[in-house]
Length: 445
Image (cartoon, rainbow, N blue to C red; front, side, top):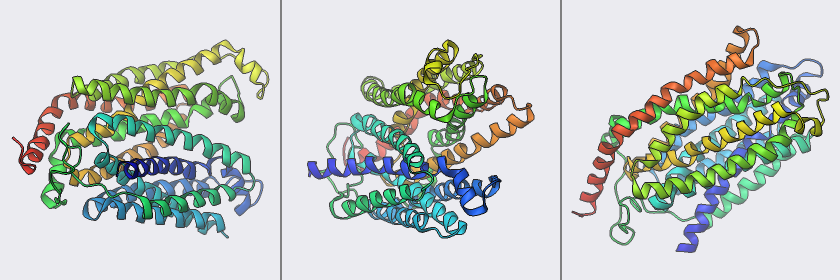
C-alpha cells in the first residue's frame, strides 16, 4: 500500500510538470501561428490573444467545476475526467486544420489542465500528513517550474513545426491517464487530519459535501481572506514573471530573448527550485513548533518582496552594444546586479507556493477541500490574467514607461499583504472549529 501511495503521489506531481509544459509550448510560436493562419506580414494580436484567453478562461471555470466535482464523486474519477479533457485538447491542437480548431483545442487544454489542479491539490491533502505536506506541495511547485522551462525550450526547438510539442504532451498525458486508471490509489477522506492520530484504520470517513458544509466554506473568515489575497498575490506574481522579458528587451540593455533565457537558466531558475524546496521544508519544520508559522512566513514574504521588486525595476541598466553577446551581458555590472537581486526576490517568493496549500488544508474539512481549492484556484487564475492586462494599460497611460507601470501594478499587492496579516488573527478560531468537528467524528476527546 505504501508503494502504491508513493507511486500515486509522484504521478500527481508529474502531472504538474505536464500542466505547465503543455500550457507553455505555444508561447514562443505566437508570431509563427499568426503567420501560419493569417498570412505573413501582419501580427494579428487580437486573434492570437484569444488563444491565451480561451486557455485561461477554460482553466478558471474548470477549477470551480472539477474542484466541486471532486467533493461529490471520488477524487480519482474527477482527476480521470480532467485528464481526458486535457488529452482531447492536445489532440485537437496537434491536428488543427484551421484557427477555430486551435481555439477549441486551447479551450479543452485549459479545461483539462485547470480541472486537474484543485483535484490534485485535494488528493495530496488526503494522502500526505500535515508534517510532510509542505515538502510535497514544494515538489509540485518545482515540477511546474521545470515544466515551464521545458515548454519554452520545446516550443523554441521545434519552431516553426510548432504542432510537434503538442503531440509529445498528448503522449505524456495518455501515459499518465493509463497509469492513473490502473495504478492510481484512491485515498480515504479524513486521513492525516488530526496531527499524529492515525485515522486510516480507525474509521471510514463517509462524509460528503452538502449545502451546509459548502456555505460553511464561505463563512470561514480565513477562507475569505485567502480568496481575496489570491487575486492580488497572483496578480502581482504574474506581473513580475510576464514583464521580465519586455523589461530587459526594451530597457537600455536591449537583450535578445535567447540571452535572457540563458540568464534565467543560470540564475533565476535555480533560485526558484532551491527556494521551493528550502521554504517547503522550513514551513514543515516551523509548523511543528508554531501552528501559524506558515502564515507568518507568507505575510513577511509579501511585505518584503513588494517594495523589493518595485526597487529593482528602477535599477538603471547601462546599455549593451550587442544584443546577442552573453559575454557582454556577464560583464555589464548593472545588469548582473539586477539579475542577482531578481533571483533573490524569486527565492523569497517561493515561500508562497509551498506554504499556502497546507494552510488551506488545516482550516477546511476533508470533504470540502476540493471545493475550497477550486474557488481559490479560480480567483488566482483571475488575478493572473488581470496582472499583465493592467500593466499593459498602465504602460500606455504612462508614455510606455515600464518602470512606472510595474510600480503601479505592484501596489495592487498591498491588499494581499493586509489579508495575510489578518489571517494571523482569524486562523486559530477556524482551525479549532475544524479540529473540534473532526475530533467528534472520530470519537476522540
